[in-house]
Image (cartoon, rainbow, N blue to C red; front, top):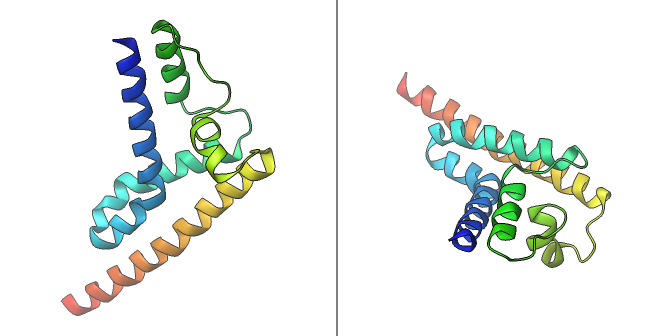
Length: 125
């Protein structure tokens, strides 16, 4: 049971990352989605730019894995699961790069959301 719950937390964690990265695109279509996406992005940027800070889902998954008799991994979720794919050796510099890149991507997307909102507001008048 604990192994199943650990995998469920892992899938939830990965879903959160997908929300953070691609949620702005959904906000282009549904502007109210920004109310869910922006806090998620701010949380993710905070975690990336504050060294040593882990998302609470990481220790939860690790604890569930230990209770299931599996071995827990060190570091954070991105570092463990996605790091080897994105960066073979994820350094603090890489974390800063991810955080700043996420910020820039979010600003670009929300600039487009804002201009779309403004143009639709002008048409309504």
